[in-house]
View 1 (cartoon, one colour):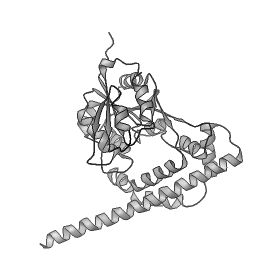
View 2 (cartoon, one colour; view 1 turned 120 degrees about the vertical axis):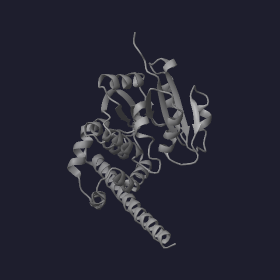
View 3 (cartoon, helix red, strand yellow; view 1 turned 180 degrees about the horizontal axis):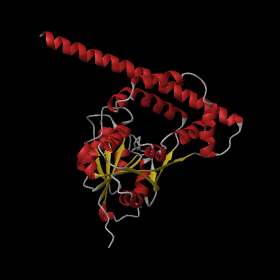
View 4 (cartoon, helix red, strand yellow; view 1 turned 30 degrees about the vertical axis):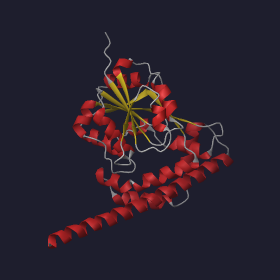
Length: 309
């Protein structure tokens, strides 16, 4: 008789009224015993109809209003989850019917503690340059897992014992908390594997959303470097390089490997998007380090003042 572990699916949401119903529809059609499944959505202060939409589905709706962070929202879900396995995805994703079944299967077959699933990007019929760049450049779960760099929470399965061992997500970082968290698990001896057949669809980003992501990710660089004991100089050096135009050949190989051969005109537009992304990312890095230095100086001044008292 096949045994199905109890699975808690955790999704942070914020102003997701345009996408959350598609995710909920896909989650309510999973090929997994419903008695062994709970859906936990954690609202992070939405001001649209997100909560009302979720209330129409068989899902538990929680709130995290103290901290505006998707990682804080995930931690709120973790505190309530009852599953032997915790599955994470995002509010703008759509999961395949076999998503949970394949994720659980990968944990068992690989004797793993964490599993990163496949993230497929959906590109609109207009095939915007920003979408093509996003689809060919981000969330390469297979590469991240195989290199030991972690796995994104857009498609992640974790044994509850891992959470008990390493604790919650860092909820003070703006971006990259999932990489920090999964790398922490790896550093403590937990096994991370990849699940090719546990698939979620993620919409490729339009230009504005892509640049917002670039800046947000950049500002989180100091915290990621500090927590992972990486070189701050390396991030700053990469930021300066991002300000210089270049990278035609490597970008073309990556893009055409993902979407097929491109004519020069459309590819140049993709390259311009990549350059704009690099500039915004670099700006975020510089701002992040400016804040980091000022905060460190403020803390040092406070400690010195305390010593004088």
